Image (cartoon, rainbow, N blue to C red; front, side, top):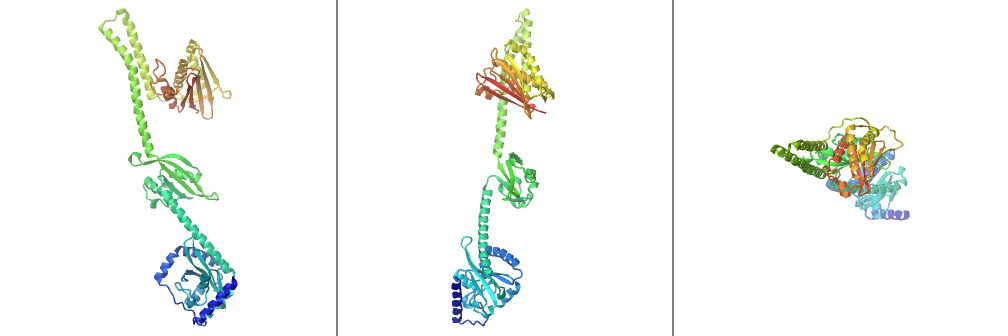
Length: 536
């Protein structure tokens, strides 16, 4: 390969001699681009020039004590840019070599730029290898490039220095620069494509997206965020995410404390007046070395779902009120009819005197029943605020069972209380003892009515680190799936003479204590009611 390059150099010098070039004269370029033409060509090579400038700066720093010049030419040999030592630049410019001139053989004689382009291989011309004697004290190295994948672009990158500073390593250095420039151009193109794809994805998403750097400054967001925050993208980019409500404080916790959030509900403005209700997710972004690069947040619009849920809840409330009113009216109408009938009979004097007292007693009992019904309804609709005290649940359960003992004996029902062995006998909760006792009586009464004679009712008291659980288990008739779904609804009852308010009242009382009532049942096997109360 070296011998072939030497042969090509000799042939070039012979062609220059035959064309009438004078080796003693200073080479004079005959072709030069106008300022406009040079600008247009440099625009075509703009990104390559940007990368070349970066590598040229590194080489100048690395070889700061060596006078050298780097030259970039296009596919026709026109000089687009020169980088390097000012002294050698002046020497070259005195020879007429400036930006915009063409390195042709017929004007510039034997030169490395022309030969590298023609042979499509690296070429080094040392001293007398040049045709013109004015360059015999110079060493020139040129490497051709053709970036087919990246742009595509072609041309040469050349290095010129004094003959005393010549070094075959320069040719290898230029070849490595060409390879590095191509990789950088490919990387930039891929990054542009990836960035474009990211922007398309981010802007087209129906969700809100925010990306920040490791200081919490916003680096990317989409149109959804502009709408939600009422700020333009230009205002948001570069600003601190911590200053934006309602999510700024949460994102501070993500970045500073390493927290992550998922499905956290947030509201921007009034949802009924153009505002948004969103589910918020956020987490830290790490690089390959697990260093914090920033954070990411996503906002999923659930405004329609939120409004629909509110409408459904409102509809259910009105439906419940209607059912409750109908149930209450039904329960009141029957005793009222009897009361009105008795009163009419008393007023008309059609009741024998000896039975008048009996009828008055019956009216009184009906009125007491109505009063009890109204009282339960009021408690169910709006239970009174619990009068909380330190209550020993084990003792309260024992007292309630003792209070109902006569009923259990009359039906010959066996009732037992089991406390987990690892628990202390004193199990203290912060509760209203009267209301909790009322709940226990209601549930035990239901269990008692559900079991046959010689049935079994078992109470279990359990505890974990957060709650006390009271399980009331019976082997009664149980509930069907349909009955189980409605058992807590007001006025729903499976008993012939029941009002259907006992469990509704109990549920509201326990709910007011911050607890829950869970119900499980199998038809003809039995039921389990579990009261869960939080520990203080």
